[in-house]
Length: 343
Image (cartoon, rainbow, N blue to C red; front, side):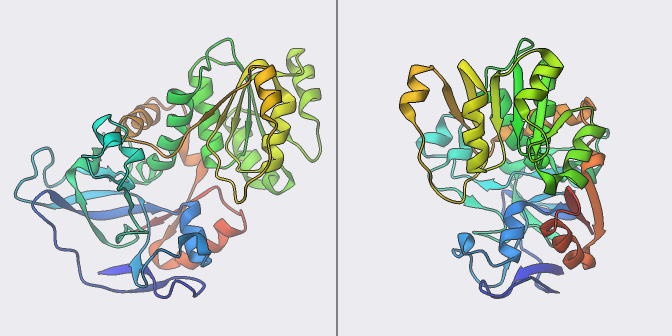
């Protein structure tokens, strides 16, 4: 079968080559991959970022995918040939303390699909049935391929925030997860929602956010406080969602959050930085963190997509599988929001 592999972890790019089809175990299914999205971590791997130097040479990458089951193992009970499915990205053990508390995304023994084990940027992928979710007829496999990043945003907003219809919210980071987080915020009834980006986000990311009906601010051209005051007569907000991983954005958040407010952080930072905890304490500013997602968040993401609360197609650009280099380079240069390879 055709697959995209990281031939040498130190070499830029990927290799499209022929590899043996996976053999399934008794609790696994074989999925014929129809669509696989490119994640930020895939881009780092493509660029040979040393963040992922634990990978073995020759690993098939990719963990955001959808497709059709064409073969089932002897002990598979909940799925059958012909089912359209997505797979969770985190492979969990099921027996550690976190897993027994249904926090499988915090599994003490987790492995990541497409990093620690072969992934789904291939014509076929073997998946344990415990990691699968069925796709309804209302959702295409292209749309379903981005359920994983949707689930990450859902975890941050639905499980870790206190946002409600009375909240005022600033979202830093207009990437796919920030925009989905803003849509999730809106689904909770909040009307005062602003998405903040920079000049580099103007052409694609902020443009897409506006198409989805979200108010946007280019922080290099406008002052967030001025926009808040012009729109709603406020200068600070009750909630901030930090999805950018930018230290500058986090520090800006501290100047925008009201006393007693809440900052939800799920961006990943490239380096450490200092934070004045005394300021947070004296102002009772709550910091909530969120990381990846579990089965419940995938199901919530599927329901959000089925409800058409978000036009996910506005975020997606599709490419034939063999045009993977163009897709990765477009992602690197922020020419598209979410590239998806079609097999």
